[in-house]
Image (cartoon, rainbow, N blue to C red; front, side, top):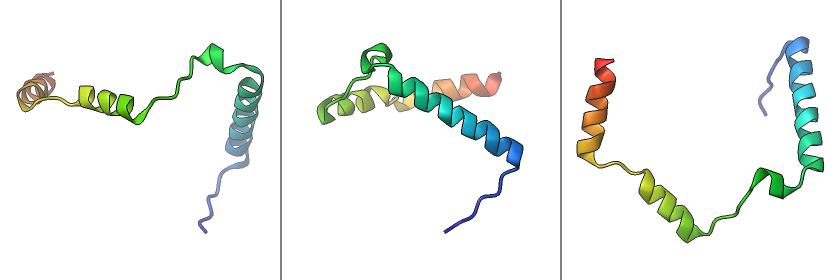
Length: 67
């Protein structure tokens, strides 16, 4: 087991944030956040759309290098 050391002030900030998020998620229904569950087929569609062909990638890399 690894031990992580945090200053007390940082710990208190993180603890308060966690408490805030816990309260938000406890009382707000799923509908407000618009959460969806996706089938494996739909996830594959997302991943396919995320891919970029080599020509486009090279053009983008050139453009980014020029900035």
